[in-house]
Image 1 (cartoon, rainbow, N blue to C red):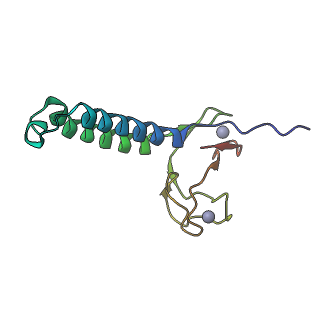
Image 2: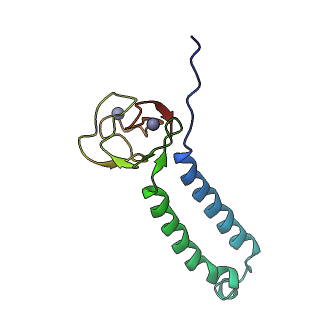
Image 3: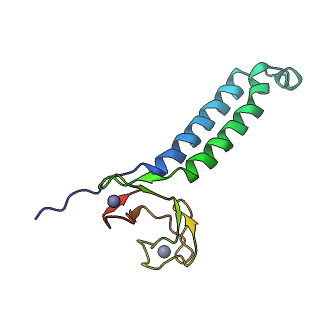
Length: 123
Ligand SMILES: [Zn+2]
Ligand SMILES: [Zn+2]
């Protein structure tokens, strides 16, 4: 029997998306800004930075809590639970986010198991 490639839920992709958007915005502000620092702080791009960074932080907290959907049984799975580390095989011992590093081996989990159907998927 052939091993099927694991399906992905694009959980880590959410945070890459935020990081890329933030870097792109900051680059835009820096490159479009005036060379004079006093003028730069008055520019509309600079004034947008505050609201934008708040927006990014809100997005980050929503993305972190927003449950993932199992690609096999389509049931929702919480992103905060006592997860089993695929690297060192240990349980976390308390509820932690799937984007956190393992308490034991400091690796970020790339694979998780569905609570309902016990199928593996990539994060
Ligand atoms: Zn499932
Ligand atoms: Zn571990």
